[in-house]
Amino acid sequence: MDPNSSVLSSPSRACSRPAESCVGGGRSPPPREQGRDSFFPWSQVPSSSLTDPDWFWDEHVQAKRARVETIIRGMCLSPNPLVPGNTRARDGPCCPEKTRERKRKQSLPMQQNPLKPGPAGNHGSRKGAPHMKEQLQLLKQQLRHLQEHILQAAEPRDTAQGPGSPEKGWGPHNVKQRNGYGSRPWAVDSDHHQRSGGDLSGVEKYPREVSEVEYQPEEPMFLPSGTRALLEILRKELIGAVSQAVDSILQKVLLDPQGHLTQRGRSFQGLVPESRIETSPEGSAYKDPLPLAALPRRAQAQAGVLLGNLSLAKPPDSPRYPTSPRMIPKSYQGPPENCPLAVPSHVQENQILGQLLDQGPCGLWSGNLPQDSPSQSHSSAESALRPWGAVKPRPSVLSQEQHPLPFTSTCLERLSLLPSVKMEHRGLQAAADVLPFSSVHIQEGLNPSHLKKAKLMFFFTRYPSSSLLKAYFPDVQFNRCITSQMIKWFSNFREFYYIQMEKFARQAISDGVTNPKMLVVLRDSELFRALNMHYNKGNDFEVPDCFLEIASLTLQEFFRAVSTGKDSDPSWKKPIYKIISKLDSDIPEIFKSSSYPQELFRN
DNA sequence: GCCAAGCCTG
DNA sequence: CAGGCTTGGC
Figure 1 (cartoon, chains in turn orange, red, green):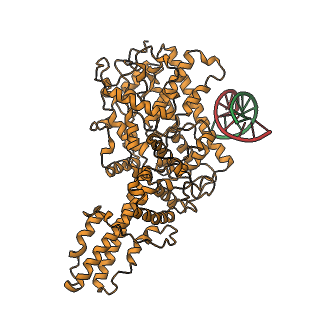
Figure 2 (cartoon, chains in turn orange, red, blue; figure 1 turned 135 degrees about the horizontal axis):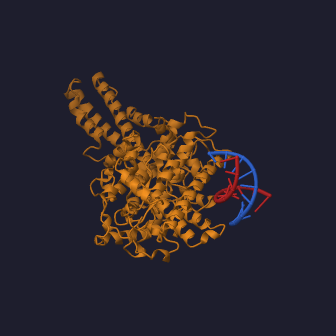
Figure 3 (tube, chains in turn cyan, blue, red; figure 1 turned 45 degrees about the horizontal axis):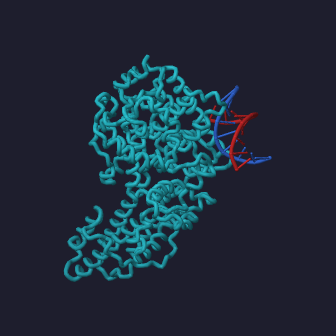
């Protein structure tokens, strides 16, 4: 069989995919432990807001920061969650790229189990705080603003109106504020009361914040009982509104921007006509023994941006490889949106939350998997015709420099454009993780749910450090044995993964494939099924595209090694391991939840 | 020598 | 998946 025969009929969908956000966009973990820890963010610049003199250095804001910081400290429930990063100043804003990358990296340790005081646990959630503080501050100012209106309305009403018709005075404001933010920006209230930095420990931060309104000294104690009752109602409404706002923020941060949020953006990218996606010409593949995968992540990102833009700027001049509609899942049939961030964030979040919660067989989690659809019979037949069906030959029409197409600009731009709100509210998320968990048992051992979670995490990280594992399994009481066991799990995962890669690479060689770049792991390929069956047996998780890209790269590396006879060297796999170990991705924040994914899988 | 990772085996 | 062993880096 001519392995290239199917090129025309099934151009690679993977080629058209924008880079997975986690590829080249995440932390750039060194292969091993000691190096990884250096990437942990508590020593890094939290965000651009710190470098924005317009607000960070503003005196008022400074004062507010101090105040809200106290609040957050109370929220986090951590014995010491807000240890200031003493190396913040180290990282200046001189290099935006660097700052951005660190911003991403800093997500990792932030969720270190605060219940476990220790070297890691003492590093605070401060990094994500500035923006969160800002939001909290806005909420509070909103409250104060409302309060002003209450007072203004209540006092005249005492003389001009009876207590029977008080709505006139404050109703509209109340509605406005509940629906969002009033026409008058809360920011005008710069006269924020500096609280005495009192003791705000414990979970009651929000109630206490609201109660600040309740006990304002200027509250007219002489109000008629009717008015007071109305004030009481308003108070409750405010409490509800604030709680709602906080909930939405927490929801926001519980949804990983790089994992699932960006996957929606990728989906849109699937609409790019594949004829527009150029690939390298045959024969150029071997000129680059260490393609993108061997580059440092930073370099990958930059290369991805440049090449991605280049490729997209080219005219659709490859009619030889028409788009195969079959390759575009139904869920991709949205508007050709390249910038998911253009969608109002709350809309996205709601949709994503819906996805996360939708675990049914018709849920979006599984809906994108072509192999589950009836139309897959075609793919299956196709795979059957290619015994090495793990892969699909990829057409090559461009120069080899276009190779790193999987790492296109879109995801990188997304990363840089991700709302800082999301990136910097992780302190709140830490609180969210802790709050429900503080009363939950920390398990001494590992259970099947942990194993399942670890397997899903493997889609993002092949070489997790023990620190990372601790961060992502907050409900596990780690000790030497547990850590070893979990490390061993990933070792076993890798073993299976590499065995499959070698197997299918050899199969491709024996089938006559000559160009490694023809080997692309797609969702309907045999190799993908094998991997998905192993790591995602229930098929209740949508395998991230970044994993497919890593798998494709791994396959290609094995192909190159075997086809060039390097497998005669007893340690011929090591260079491949080294490459792959640099390609770990950021794990979605949702994985840090102690109840994820066990909670979902219980259903 | 220690330790992490990989390999082999059951 | 886990235990035992080997290997290689430090």
